[in-house]
Length: 304
Image (tube, rainbow, N blue to C red; front, side, top):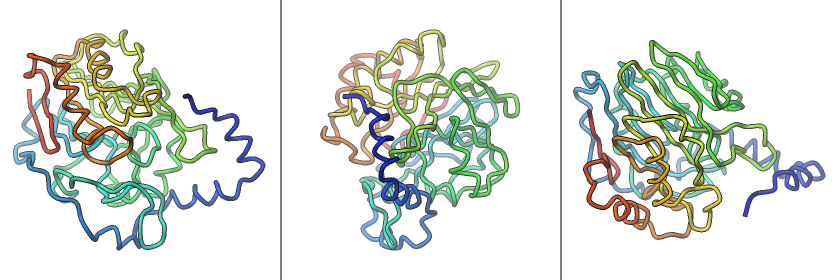
């Protein structure tokens, strides 16, 4: 069932204070959330080797959930960075929201020098202000439109907000916002916020970061890509907002992806399907073409 934002906005206009409070709580930097540090999630079985990261012309490492470390065209790119043990609104000494089941494959200190951050939309599992507050500020933030107010106060010097079809160029690499079937509000009344996927292009390589999307055929005009990063989890019962594994693979096929990295699973419990089901169904759909899949668990990594 689709969310009727008009009805929610009407309710917010009649009684805005609870929603206003939620919006303010969603802007915290996590400085006081010491209780989140207890019962830390276990480390993943795999750990990416980034010792020679800058030598790779094209590489990808799955840090967890929708956080992907990319090397494309001489740039190191991090998508939707979330390194916190919990995601959600700040409630004093803790975060009110889902806890992490597996730690990030790399800590923030272990990351190579970053050039670009991609922020696809404002949902808490994609835009985590406590994480962003800890990242270097000399990176270029490429974001969907309507996200600037969530990052400006954190000190980032360059922020490019893009609507679908708009592009930004960073050191010879082009980032173009692509359509998805999702929604972008962080809280119930900020319906102005954008959302989208991003196509990353150089003279040699094309990478599609798919972010969150229900099944759609909007990517077909993109053409062939070297790597498609697609979300495969949180579909039960949210199939109207998140593709299931088989649909995600079909969407990767729409862009004739040479390689596919399935993400948005096995990290946070955001829906009802068993934690291991998304990747099991995805690999079953892939069949014998398993070499096309570049990472099946947190910490997996690949280079061209």
